[in-house]
Length: 140
Image 1 (cartoon, rainbow, N blue to C red):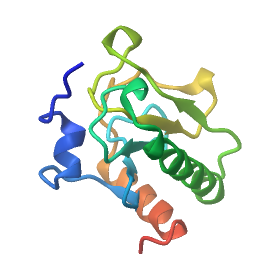
Image 2: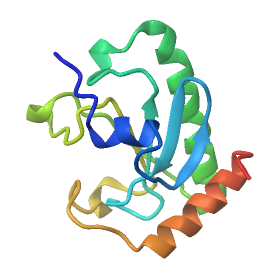
Image 3: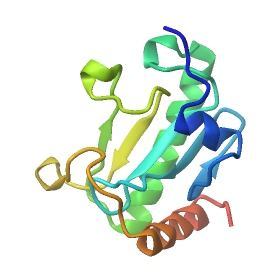
Image 4: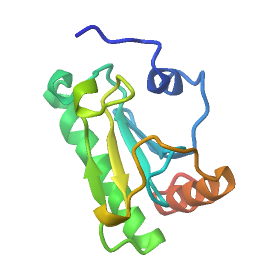
């Protein structure tokens, strides 16, 4: 595959588009999904330009999964989540809508999820959730 450097997540990584950041290190970025499937829906992406998991070098995999674990812990602590759906889609046929590897962390039960990418969430609510999660993760 040929990575599309103009996708929305690549633009977020370059600072060309805003996001509600909740965590960042040299390998990854975590931020809120503005089209949440449930309250507190977060995304974790690598800073490496991979479209799918198969394209991610192994040296990025461990730190990326470490960020996933940190965000899940914060969702449980801050949002009182008793379960977190971890979803990762590879390719358009699997439902991937942004051609940059990303993990969805959705603090909800599968039965309660809205459709993937169906509607924009309340920005004030998402911002408040982001601030609380970022504070728990030591960003602010």
